[in-house]
Length: 332
Image: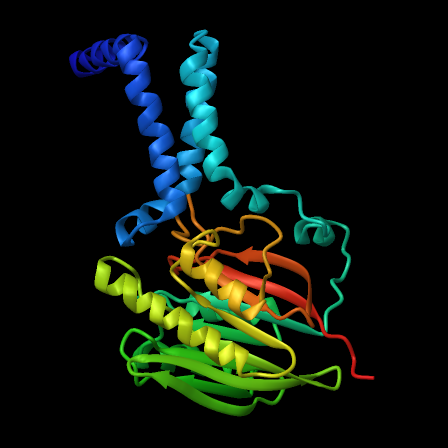
């Protein structure tokens, strides 16, 4: 109890200092500066912090409400300005989806009409209960399943469960930390691993509605330092080059280790003109946390229409899966 009393006293002292003119000025400048730096993203440290833009936005909302109710309009205004600076990057993911949510369709027992369904999962590299991911994939009924962070041992377990329902498979396990596999209920063609030094991309194609749909799967490095941040930038540039070299419908899926409003993701979307399948936030990591960030993706070209997009949980992975339902326009 004494500890809580001391914390309460310190908090009251801090609030009193904040409400002084100097305190208000310093705190207001700090909040606005933090928001500007987040949007600017000068370097890997700020880029990593910017992944937490949503928790920061929640803090700012509480900050504005608290000081508004205390009639401290200067600080409430400063918090509002800081919130407005970072809002454009995250606001689109909180808008109501144009399509009926999958859960509501299930409640109505309606069937989502799609020409192609795709499930993506980062399985967690050291997952000791990897079979739960394979079971989720099997129960999804997806046409295509993308699995990442596989190891030879975990791949053998997954493969033994998946092959009965998914007779077509292409995998790449020779790059440590980048083990991947594509499973399909329909024939996979043009399968190959496209690599830039240590960084591999799985490439394949399927036929849907008389068209060849190109599939790319990759997972980027985690930017925990400046070197990894630059490596990730090179990986995003490589993925963009591969997408631009393809003609016709394209799907790029994977754990990109970057939030949608990040510098690298925005550059990828701008260069390739790919669209994010997300209808809302659809955060995926960490799966067991109440506060999650969206770092997994199924991106698609403009020739393809995503009619439904949901997260998939209930597994031992530290990532939620992503399930997309896609319509492919028939060839004329």
